[in-house]
Image 1: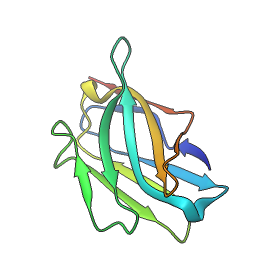
Image 2 (image 1 turned 90 degrees about the horizontal axis):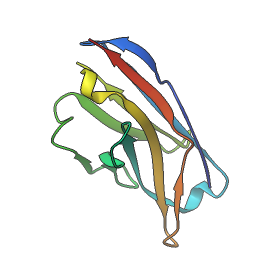
Image 3 (image 1 turned 90 degrees about the vertical axis):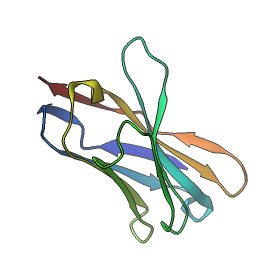
Image 4 (image 1 turned 60 degrees about the vertical axis):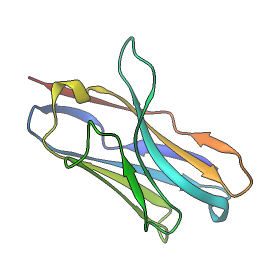
Length: 116
């Protein structure tokens, strides 16, 4: 499975961005998908996850009510709608997926910078 993120960029505080993660390869095996982020000097942290059918989502407390994770399995694409962005949301955002076989894949990351 290959994952490619897009949609990052520079935005002012209070603004919005929509990240996309396009999957290719053995996409039939994709199970739970998620977004993670890593700020400079910090560990990578979970942002949000979504189950295979999209029926269940989980969010980090820091983004609840502001971010929305979704997926379109027909397009093999996952999204992260980010609203009310804050400077502390600045990080490289990574797409992640686990497969039905227990393997795990990461995308290359996309930079999100929120200016104050």
